[in-house]
Image (tube, rainbow, N blue to C red):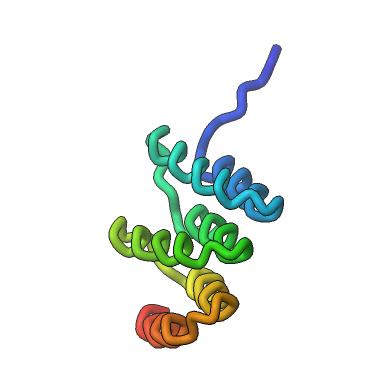
Length: 109
């Protein structure tokens, strides 16, 4: 008998994280979208994996958009979230945004 893979939060989180580690940030974002379309609610780990994937590949604007979407959808932001997006902004020379995010982190974490 062939076992079917259950598409749950843990499965999606692993796949999104793997995409990030493979420098496939666009695929990570696609999986996050598929996750929501499949009625599987992304959690902090899901979003952090996608933020990290974008941040490590120069996608600081996408990382910021994801952080804003997390706030909008009431997904908890943690030090991993802020660390990834602050690092992305710093690498892009967006130090003012990095400072604002650092201040927001102190208020949220």
